[in-house]
Image (cartoon, rainbow, N blue to C red; front, side, top):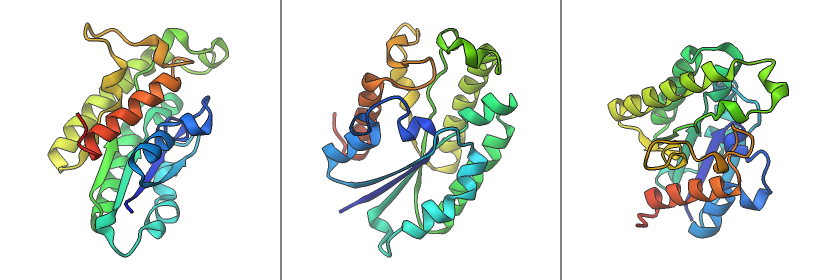
Length: 198
């Protein structure tokens, strides 16, 4: 059986949806793979880097050919600091540490931010309009970085836009986190990539 470890924040944890409807659970059900959800709501890439050894590297089996690791984070870095500088450095470090351990990492592209639909109480703390643009720029950087580093990209964000470029608002229940329909799209994206479906 193939093992998939998913390291991330609330987008990986599945904040706001039933556990069985999270994209990691949906993919596990469809694929039959052993999927470990190592998402922690509110985590930053520095937190993910700090727990990479505990949550990922120690869980890898001896046969690394049967192990996959998906890393996705950076949105909270931007929300909390206003910049993606730390996210870029930490994501790069995680990718290289995984490669050094013989694992070909996959990088998930974080979801877009629908700043106008974020709850009012959160908007008192963060400039979500500016953050939305920064998250989009960070996603573009991630795509370019993955192409240059030879890392596999799981472009979850792509499915949250309509063909005309408009955001699919109904797929983000609070402007930040995917609804159950959003999680289904994420699971489908991963299945198309890893199971070569469609």
